[in-house]
Amino acid sequence: MHLFACYPARCDFEASFSLSRSSEKNHRDPMDYDYPHVNDSEITDTLDDSTHSDKPRILLMGLQRSGKSSIQRVVFGKMPPNDTLYLESTTKIQKEDITRSFIDFQIWDFPGQINFFDMAYDSQEIFGAVGALIFVIDAQDDYTEALNRLYYTVTSAYRVNPNITFEVLIHKVDGLSDDYKIDTQRDVQQRMNDALADAQMEYIHLTYYLTSIYDHSIYEAFSKIIQKLIRELPTLENLLNVLCSNSGIDKAYLFDTLTKIYIATDSSPVDMQSYELCSDMIDVVIDIECIYGAQGSSPNGHLSIVDENGDEQEGGDDGGGGGMHPNGNGIAEHTEDGDIDAESLRPAEGTDQGEADASSLIKLDNGDVLYMREVNRLLVLICLLRHDNFEKHGLIDYNFQCFKEAVTEVFEFSQKRNRQHSHDM
Image (cartoon, rainbow, N blue to C red; front, side, top):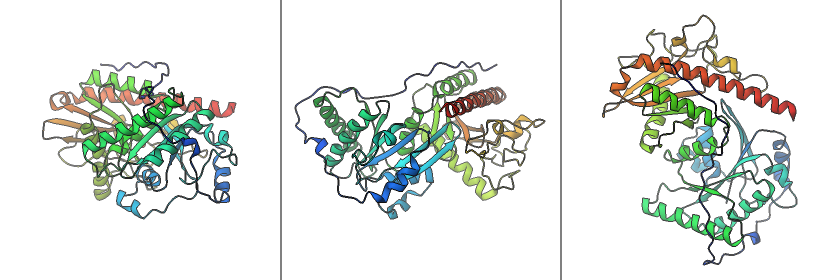
């Protein structure tokens, strides 16, 4: 059975809360927010160096000690959550380039005590190329001041760039009861709706997430945020839908291997339990590889998802494993300009297609199967399906190869478009 995929036009993915007019509550004017005095020279050099890239930006903003730097280090730096307790407060912009397959942006961590909308800074230069502005609120603290700052930040940024998507992380909820979490989110959302309605700015949409660095919620939130910045998302979702319908797969996720962010999933509802299982599978396989080593590992030290040795191995019938190959089979490499080379996503000529793909299989107690296949060094596909459907794994493997080729073609098209855009600028 063949996989057929179409490439729909880009659509608006923004999931937002509707804002209702209310004047029952009186709020202190957030535009009167007083920022503490800081030495502007501390960030001038960093700011000048940061504003020359044309990559879309994700801004992390919020009050001091709200958890912005911890989020960045845990999600993109793989820092253990407990180690974030020793992080010092941010005093200048911390910029990081994230270039991994379809994920291509800059993330900026802003110090909470500086007003970047002040006349001393060029707001257009800072916020003009922003794709998403993430505002972090500490749910374990009194967030009245944070809401004032959120209102000021959102309304000011919108005037500079109306295309920004505004995301609100109600953070540090790991120590709160479920009822208290829901009440906190409802209160934050209602108070912001009232403030925006009073200012006749109901058209500004905010999306809210309950997050913690100690569970999967922060990865789930960033997955949804980053998906809004991926122009190829409709195509990837359509490919996953076709794969699932033709292969008897209940749920499929396309994961970034380093961050455990899923950049796309099929159209069926996301179940948090299934997402956590798939996310944990990446850690399990990588841990096994670190302990036992990878078959055919490349001498340059790259780490790749590999086959698990033993009776549970299925999918890689040739027994050659799915490790890294020094000749670049199925491996993406960075070119000199920092972009991912699309050709490196393809297996080398003369290589058995099955040898280029790592795979892993986990059978759950309820009879379901977690099946992982490596798309390339940067992406893995993890599927959840019933054991009866997995008996047709030959069909699944064939459809996966069709899916992999389609993803590679989409990536090549994306790279050409990005290069053309950079050339035109």
